[in-house]
Image (cartoon, rainbow, N blue to C red; front, side, top):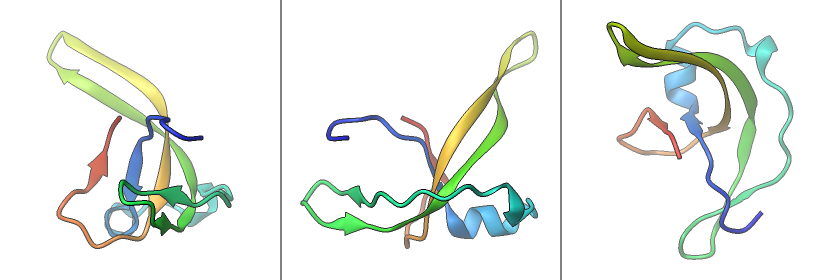
Length: 78
């Protein structure tokens, strides 16, 4: 899956949102970072996500890959 865009949800953010872990589906493929190292995934989860504000919004079902990583981001949408 080289060059594929991916939406990542970091595990520490997931835990703070009080979402049931039962919604997590297995995902066994590691991610390859920009320098060739591998990052283990902790599963995938589909969540309704709203983009926009006011009358200009859209709610979509988005599949997020859960990653246990030390980062200043909560979610990466790509």
